Amino acid sequence: MEDLDCLDDLIGHGNYTYELKGERECPVRRKAWKKGVKFEFPQGNQAMFDKEEKGIFAELKKNAAEWVTPPDTAVLLPLCMKEHVDHVLLRDAVLDAKHALHSKSKATLYLGEDQPYTGLANDRDWRVANTWLAERSSETLNYEIDSDRKASLVKKYYPSQSEESYCEGVLKRARALAREMLLSSGGVERMYRLLFV
Image (tube, rainbow, N blue to C red):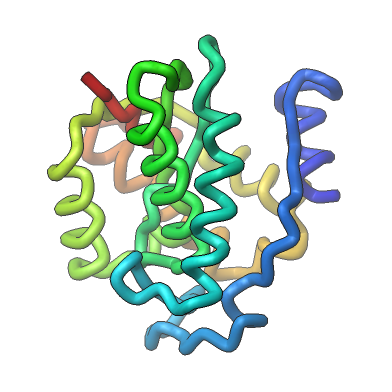
């Protein structure tokens, strides 16, 4: 319901597709949690997938073939900061589907910085993410935003997510990017467009 309320306001009712696949989330699969202070989840990558995750990956890849085929389509994926295993499952399945389809895949893929993870990430988390990005061709896209307004919208549309460290992570990253771009107020959000030749 949180997603639908937000998307209806952001994009407009009837102007998007929303699917639920019903896979068990990582805590339900009893995955070990990454050690950390705030907002950590089970982490992993393809090399660490267990049998159940390999099955979820195969099913997602099959579904993703439909998502990445049409032209004039944007598919937004998580960057996978902190390697939250459920985010990695989705991102990598969609990327594999796009590669498998080659020229039949017309959709453009974007990576969004997982929030609040990017604002709560440590140096190691950034090294892993930046190494992953450096191994692929991508274009960085920065958008100026009103970070305080965004934090209030997170609280409005995602009350189940808006505990203190969530809002802290969202604001910290938006303001850090604004400083990086020498902006005096507001904030910045960053995405990455994947370039496939």
